[in-house]
Image (cartoon, rainbow, N blue to C red; front, side, top):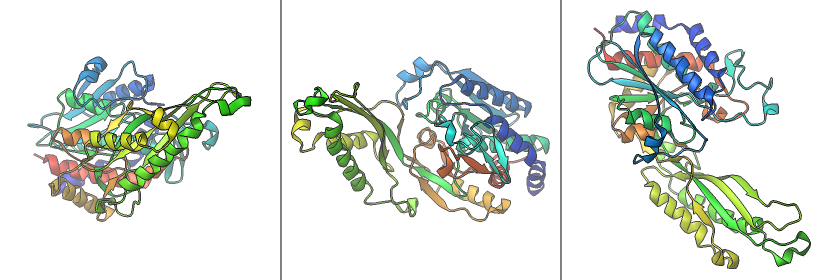
Length: 418
């Protein structure tokens, strides 16, 4: 086994791995776009070249939307593809799946990006910049580099190793949902989301909400004849902030020093249709953090009670309308005492990364779908999530190297060698 591990580590081509990352970043695979499917087919070719048995299929969106547990979606979508590669010759269910999503969030204001091109994959010293570099194409590059190194080293695995590439993670998890519905599974999975050297064993959830606040229109010159929906939204926003404080009073130790693991945020607000008219409708959308092990239905009920019980004369007569469109992320966690945690920790240490701390993340991910499907799952991957979704998105190439080495050891140990 030690000889096989050494050969696989020696077979990792660091320059090639950086090139894989740069190639992926240059594909503008925004959630729901044609480029998302383009990148899936690109990775399918690479997995085939790496000697894997590859399954590429078009997601049956109508069927998936009708299935129990459908995780919702936010981006308009007319198609999507699933992609799974499995090493040849192994026996039984894959001992390990390395999973990552190909989609990225929109770029925002291009003027805020240095160099103006978010998809240029610009390298400066040890850092690669670009949309998706951190979240999570560096993780995808690491996954593929592991498979290539095992093949290049001539190591034959006893049990299969799988690579799952999914779409639509950013807006709910449709791709992971479709992959599991297809019948793909594994004994354990590592999702290579950015973790800053930690091992993430639990995720809070996040539910997308929509609020409609009614007002009464009037000419701006006679505004007292109307009711401004922006003004009456303010007590609703204050109620949301009170609820947020209440839901974050008792924080599980696994969140460390994070003071707000279950945030509630209003992300968009739209009101009015004419500058000199009192606006009669405000629409606000945002996300509600779901506590660990909390039923999402209970989280929804708590939110609705908070915004529907405000002591305000207008709101009592015209209560906010609450709906739940878009992504619906439940919480999830690795079962306590599962050996995957120690196995990953040992692989990281043996690859030279020291002993990684265990932590939990305040955001939803595909982890909850995999654990709900009976697959022991955690996060470990290159990057710092604070750079995700931002115009400064970047990843340190030294982290990419360290994670790739640790995952290679984990794969060889979990799957075994002939």
